[in-house]
Image (cartoon, rainbow, N blue to C red):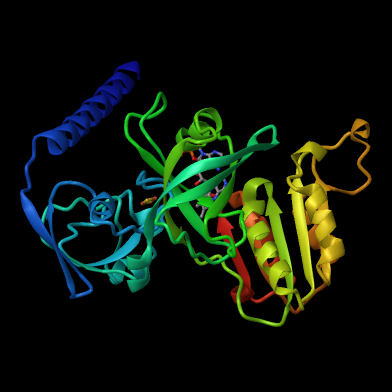
Length: 367
Ligand SMILES: Cc1cc2nc3c(=O)[nH]c(=O)nc-3n(C[C@H](O)[C@H](O)[C@H](O)COP(=O)(O)OP(=O)(O)OC[C@H]3O[C@@H](n4cnc5c(N)ncnc54)[C@H](O)[C@@H]3O)c2cc1C
Ligand code: FES
């Protein structure tokens, strides 16, 4: 038995070593020369081949949505490759459904440019810009969430975005990473602010970009942002709104609430905000104030780990408990949910059971 196990282990180790050697050889020694990337039958780019399409396009200042920085774990970097993409890789299939596979949709971070490529992308992506920014505010919001505010240095006319969208923030090479890395962060500030932009960033254990933000970025430091990306935005409708967030998932919701506040809300809005302890509740006082200043806004925070010492008289439990308690069957509402993927999925499932049509549930999962 042990001989079989040793044999299997050796074969796996040799296969892994060969794959690594091939990858190294491909990366450092293979020369694919120059190739053409033709986009939407219109733009023709002559590029140095050999790198993933996502990064090759970024060098040409065409920025495809991405949250994981090209690691193949977010599934956001989809493009249609009509020709030249090579076979679909096992790393792509978990993120592509049958319809997308049939339509030649691929993950641009997994497709290496080795031949001429014909590509189709949304024209709107040509408007995505790179911004040079300088940190102008750093504020701990909770023990593991920081607010980072930036002044936009260039382009000089600042930024235009929709409340709910996200940017990619770059961490340059440092102790946790040999290469520069980009991650997605939702904009927490009002879309009416053109020259400043802010984020709520949770520290993730061993996380490359979140730890760079928490431990290295300080007032005056410059950084690079790309965006804005995403379709988690307010929709035109007169229906009542239910907003649900946990942790830094409040960021895009807070941006939406500021927009609604500025424009003068006419719709009823309820915000369910969940976390563990009272000190985890970001902007608790500000949100209570919004209850006074926005026409029909109700803020219901809930805590999942309170003890008697916390002296908490509000709701206890998770945001899903609030859905069970407050949302009637077949409600006429639009829903916006943001935060950890498991929370978003549980809320969506409950709301569907309550009879909310799927197209009225809009969300962003933080991976
Ligand atoms: C559309 C979108 C918007 C986002 N907006 C925000 C935001 O406003 N604020 C914010 O803090 N984050 C946000 N995120 C998450 C963010 O993009 C990063 O995934 C997160 O900061 C981790 O990046 P990292 O480089 O620190 O960790 P990585 O180096 O990418 O990961 C290190 C390890 O942590 C694990 N990991 C990665 N992400 C998480 C996580 N969220 N929780 C627990 N473990 C994790 C990884 O699997 C890996 O093992 C958003 C994500 C998406 C898709
Ligand atoms: S960039 Fe995340 S899967 Fe491609």
